[in-house]
Amino acid sequence: MSESVPERPRANFVAALNVRRNAIRGFGFSLLFTAAVLAVFVVQPGTRQPTPYYLGLAFVLVTSLGALATTVLTLISAYRLAQETDLD
Image (cartoon, rainbow, N blue to C red; front, side, top):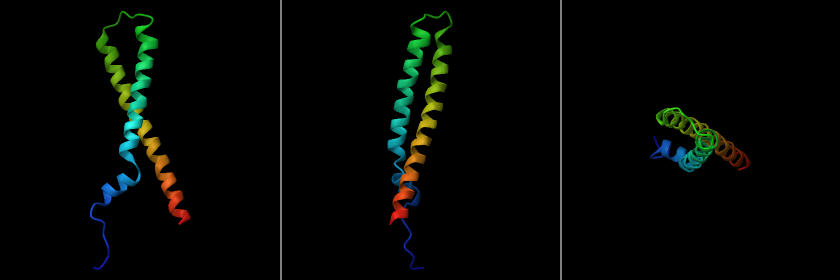
C-alpha cells in the first residue's frame, strides 16, 4: 500500500480540464447569444405574446446552449491535455 493516491482525484481532474473557465466562457457566450436573439426576434419587431413565454424560452436557450458550449470547450481541453501527455 505504498501507492501515491491523489487526495482529491475528481477535483484535480476538473482543474486539469479547466471546467470552471470553460463554464464561464460557455454560459457567457450563451447569455450574449440569447440577448441577441431576443433583441432581433422579440424586441425589435414588437410582439403581442405575454412576456413570461419569452422569458421561459430565453431560460431554456441560455441553459441548453451554455451546457453545450461548456461541453464542447471541455472536450477541446481534454483533447489538448491528451496531446500534451502523449508527447511526454
